Image (cartoon, rainbow, N blue to C red; front, side, top):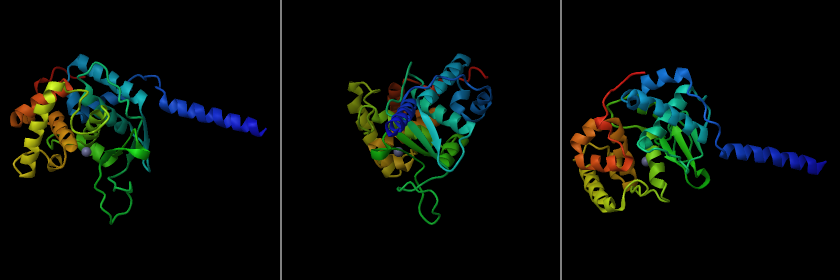
Length: 264
Ligand SMILES: [Zn+2]
């Protein structure tokens, strides 16, 4: 009997583990999500009709490959829409993309501290999102408040969840170092480092309009500059034409030239 129970336990565990790691079937895009996308995701609104269709398919593909869980909060449709949109935006220029280094996203209701606590009021809870390592390898933790805030303001050049997905893209070559080797051809690496270091110096001397956090390391520079690139592409191209050109090569998209072609 005991063997039977153990056997059943093993089967349940295996099915559970398998389902977690396995791609689930790609679902159809829920009708009511279209309005959510149009209302909240500026990037999507700028796409042409066929691009929008492609964007929605890519969102559903992403959601079939990654699980989303919430801690002390309910997952709403808008959370899923915003997370999937943030995942697709930086890789929309590629024909196909799988975040092989991500299995799940955990949503916290609010910002958290280094011990992943979000409740203690007195303490500083300044982290809005992170890409996990060690015990949290292949996981992303996102503050729901920050996730929503990133899409609420179209002019602030910032977006926490896009920032975290860029960290994942950077990390895909094995190390997060601000040089996305998977995307950037070899001959551009030295020029990219030079541009990056010059601008980081400008940030640290208060001579740049790129968010201060971008001056802390190459890793953060890439993520912060990419947020700006996708949130305010026209302004970014005007103020930082060389960095813009480099990110355009990286992400294989030119968001500043995208005209509003259609609505759906
Ligand atoms: Zn970061």
